[in-house]
Image (cartoon, rainbow, N blue to C red; front, side, top):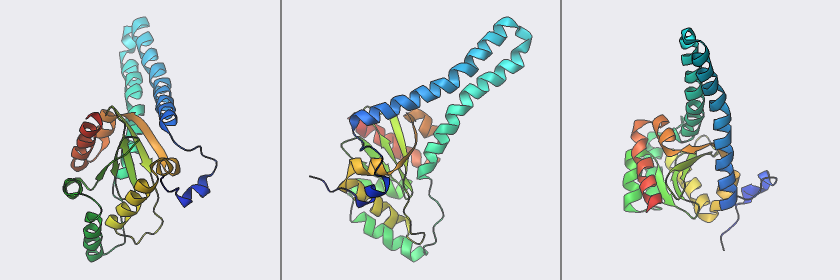
Length: 211
C-alpha cells in the first residue's frame, strides 16, 4: 500500500485521481478545444462561401482557430520550463549529484541532456522537472501538463526534482490530485511548444508509454 501525501489535506475538496478521472479530464480538454476551434473555423468557411472577397477575414478566423489551442499547449509546456532559482552553482552541482542517486543510469543521462527525469508510473510515463511534470498517457498520444509548487525558493533544481520525484513514487495518484493541470492534449502539440533541448525527453517518454 502506498503512502498518502499529507499535502492532500490542503486540497481536500478534490476527488482523488484515477484512470476514469484522467479520461474524463482528457475528454473535458478535448471538448473545450473543439468549442474554441469549431466556431472560428465554421465562421471562416461560411464567410468565404458567402463572399469570396472576405478572404482576409476568413484567414483571420482560421488563424484564431489555430492559435487558441496553441496558446493552451504553450501554457502546458511552460510547467517544465526551468524557473530562476536563487541557489548557488555549487549547490546546483551537489543537488544534481544527490538526484543521481535516486535514478538509474539511463534516467541520469536523459536528465543531463534535457533537465527532465523520466519515471514510469501506473498512470503513464512521467517527465519530472523542477517546477512541474508531464504525464504521457499509456498510448503515448496524450500528455497532461501539471504545475507543482515547491515553496522554498532557495532549493536548487536537483533538490526540487528529487522532492517531486519522491512524492510521485510515494503516492502517484495523490501527486496527480495535488498538482494543477495546466493542459491536456496531443503530445505533438505540447512537443511543438517545448524548448528544443527538452523534446527528446518527450519523444522518449512517448516511446516508453507505447511499449
